[in-house]
Each structure stands twice: as structure tokens, then as C-alpha cells.
Amino acid sequence: MASAKHEWSGWRTAAERALYGAGGFFRRPEGPAGHFRTSVHASPLFARGVAELLCRVDEALGHPAEVALVDLGAGRGELLTRVLALAPGLPHGLGRRLRPYAVERAERPAGLDGRIAWRDAPPEGCAGLLFANEWLDNVPVDVAETDADGVPRRVEVDLVSLDGAERLGDPVDGEDAAWLARWWPLAGAEPGLRAEIGHPREAAWARAVGSLRAGLAVAVDYAHERAARPPFGTLTGFREGREVRPVPDGSCDLTAHVAMDACAAAMGASAAVTDAAAAATAPGAALMTQREALRALGLDARRPPLALAATDPSAYVRALSAAGEAAELTDPAGLGAFTWLLHPVNLSQDVLRP
Image (tube, rainbow, N blue to C red):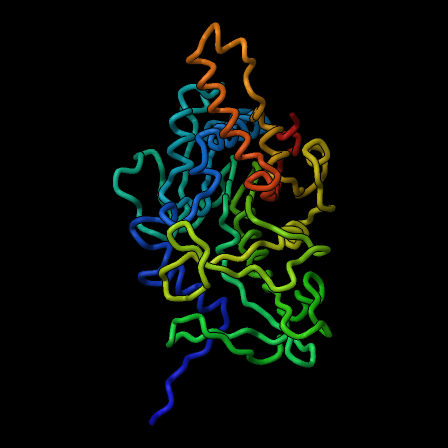
């Protein structure tokens, strides 16, 4: 009997095809919202926070004739749609000067607001806010695993069986080995430890930031730092709201947490910053949690005073609902633990000062 055929590939190539190739996961008509829930989908308050940040960037830019809001990894345009709904109430006529761009590889969804420009890459040379919510985790990367001798080898996945079957390939070398040595050391480690090789994300982020003439670039994602890398990596799949085995067949999201400190350093961060006040004055790029960022943008998870229930029950219910949504977005054990990477371009970074 002839042996089964195999076609082995590194995870970076396999994920690129499964996510963005013909019929890939992110090109499907239903969009990613049918498979996982981000902060954008959790509450309209997230869009309010982004709108507040946009207003502060506009203020710092001196209210130019046009202000861009670039949503990188826009899904089906949910964030921009919600910000545009707030546009008439934005100060200094910002709603009239706003130029929204959705950056996504999928086709433009039917019925999307005509004011939103749909692109496959960020516009070059604009001024404003570039916002990338859960985008970097979907920039494909290769995976390394230590063999029985502690040598990091590239993990390969079968592109024929499409069942997630893996094997260890050649030792990691070149740029990949240099990145591991600096950011996620594996050499000499016990067998079976894993790392995701993150330099493609640094390059992708550098290109995104480089598209801005002036303003602020923000990446929001699951992240980890060098001192506490997950020993077995984080590559996983999501399908219909559930975590599943990562299989590169286009049926599920393929995601891995981001070495955000490496992305920050690649763009010239002075250090990881862990609170909003420090980030507001730090030069270069800065890191903070979503909890800190949204609180600095005015999201309030405190319950409304009980006395309001007696004087205005409807207002109390609305305020209580908003407090619950804000609590979810800032929960330190949930969405609030996301990392925000902020990189100003020809802009002071005091826009996040509470």
C-alpha cells in the first residue's frame, strides 16, 4: 500500500494561507464576529473610548482640516460604524473633518456606511489615529520547539491531512534564531518547550506606524513579556465562540498572543510602561493595560447611586447597564488585561492623561 502523502510547512506559511488565502477564514462572508468576541463587540462603550482618544489626538494636532481614523483589521467595520454614530456630537466639528478607513483583506461588506473607505492597506501620509484591535495576533508567525537535545527546531504542520498534525523540522537559524535569543530564549531548554517567533509582527507594526504622517498608532491585543513567556506557546484556534485545536484549513481563527514588548522596542520604546500617568509622559512608544487606558479615557465602572433609582428609574437602569459594560471592558481578569501599545508620531503622548 502506498504511503499517505504529506506536505509539510512552517506555521507562518500555513496560517497565512488558511487565514487570508482564497476561501480563508478572514475572507468568509460572515466575518470573524461569528467566531469570537472582541471589545468592539462587547459594548458600544469601547467605541466611545476610541472616539474620546480620537478627540484628544485631534486636539494635539491642532484640529486639522482632515483627521483620519484608520481601523486596522476592521472585521466588518463595526468599530468605525459605532464611532460614526457618535460623529455629530464630537467637538470642534470633528465629525465633519473625520475620514474613516477600514483596512481588511476581505471584500467590503454590503450596506457599510458610504463614508468608510475600504482598503487592503493603511493610507499613506495621513494624520490622526490608527487603531489595531486584535490585529497583531493574526499576523502569522512560525513556531519553534526544543527537541530531545534542547535544540530549537521549526514546527511544521501537514498541509495535506489538514488535521493539525505536526513534526519538528530543521533547527531554527538566521533572523529567527536571533529573535529567539533576544526575546524568547529556548536554546538548551528542556524538550517540548515552545515559542512563537515574533519578528514578522514587529515588521508589520513598523509599516503600520510608518503610514502615519502625524498622530497616534495604537495596537491592542493579548500579550506577554519576556520575563513571563508561556512555556508551551499560545497558538490556538477559535471556531463559533469556542477554543479549538489549531488546524490550517480555513475553518477557524488561528491566533497566538503577541510579544508586545518586542514590538514596542522595535519602534523605539524606552521601556514597558505600566500605568497611564507614566505612559502619558514617556518618550516614544509605551505599554499599558486596557484597564488603565480606558480608565484614562473616562470609562467609569462604578455603580450609579441608589438614590437615582427612586428619582429616575430609567436613568438608573441605563447607568447600571453602562457600569456593567465598563466593568467587563476593564476587568483585570478579562478584557481589561489586554495590552495597549501606543506609538506617537510627531505628537506628544499626553493624550492619555486622565
